[in-house]
Length: 478
Image (cartoon, rainbow, N blue to C red; front, side):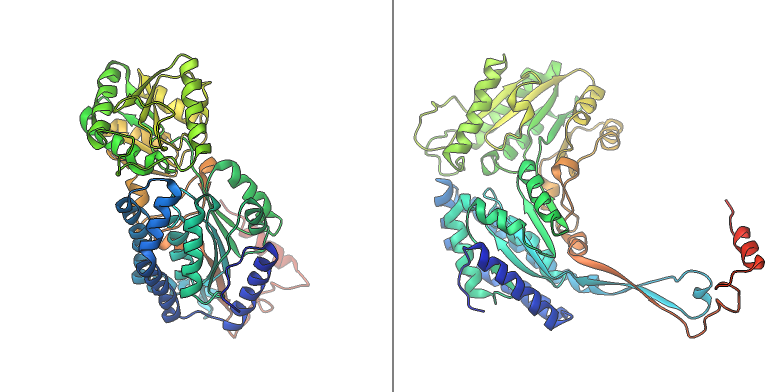
């Protein structure tokens, strides 16, 4: 098949059909071939990292090259290298114990892990490389092929990804399609063997509906309002700085970014002051600051600004760090907006912020915080700052989230030796580590019968006798 970049749904269907034929013809995918494919992805990022970084900067209208290298290039390389260096033991079949009496008669049983076929991976605009290549690492380790769909919001980056993949990969191993919502709709309607989508909960539901028409299993990495608890036992200055650093990451445009920070009522003003001071240390200025990531486009900027104006009209106090900046300032770089105690009905309390703003809510008792968290959709991440071990354990045992970081923010998502994924409205399924390998593998049970079949001798086959009935009744025990 030629290495053209696919932009039409009908060509996507043909590519997937060719993938299925190639998968069936090739049979088992040995470890050496899996490692070669992963290494090709690594080599691709090494070769094309500069044009990819430049494309991300242009797409965002301001994204520091060092940040793109750290977050997208090195983050993706970390996933790929971890998979390359660790997947081989995961491939081994696992012996299992046959049921009685066959366990005593020489029967054998085992579980084998087989690739599913072709995995469709839909990336995001906010982490345009990581959300493609990190799940790709798990998919390739499991022996699958893949077709990638970069986000059309970052069109320059999508084009470079498509050109790089076309240059480095056989399209029947890893292919790329580009395009807007129409291509996205067509993509999720294809009979892939697995689909990975990273994005909003609303779009995730549409992806799942489309995939259900072909009974395609899905991994959904969504988002939500990741709650952050600053306990009375926390060091306020440390907590404020680490939360500020998290909000500074990618301009707050990350699915695991702290969204609502709960602070003890008597510490509220001290925390707000510390948060403003910490963010100001990171960004003494905003407009034209080469270290600050801009809001990706005007539509998303208008969305965030609408949350802020709605909160202010509802009576919330809004402060900015390091200082307010006129909305018509050049570019889309914005200060951090700190929205203090908005009412529950405010838009910013209902929607994921996904931008340079954070809510700070005062609390009196930790159980009220737990109740508020549990009254909302399950978040992708939860953060706890504090040194009270009993309270920490109470939070862990009485809440549910995709993952947790204690005394920091977002670090759990960077672990390769642990699964990353959501729960409920924040998603389903995992990638990273062995759990990612398992996600994209078919876990297949094999039973090998012994030569001797005892069933007729023991009266376990028709015609059933009274003795058989007595034997069955005797097995009905608590």
